Image 1 (spheres, rainbow, N blue to C red):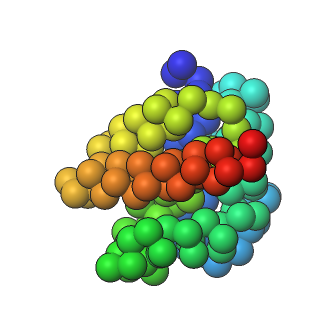
Image 2: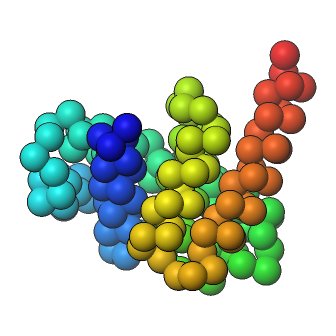
Length: 140
């Protein structure tokens, strides 16, 4: 459980780094995760999560903007924006139970972002999850 949290934390930090620089820089990301953990499996998992998320970040941003038009990604604190990206990617691409994904995103927001961030992240991710489940149900 702690390894998964550390993986998400490192992935969020890599996304923050790429977001700040406006591009995916794998060498920079490797250095960042190397500084954050001695566990090679955690470092690689964080890089994989961040890479998968970054590859879809434009589509995720559009989804989030549609759900929360008053707080589009460009107006969100950078930590929130990247936590949302990471959580939306995990909700839609990985078999992690949705409750775990949302709870972890909220906990990371409590630790790294503003006082209002956990509630905002919870609301957005709840709406994303409902839409995603509705789409999955329609395909079945």
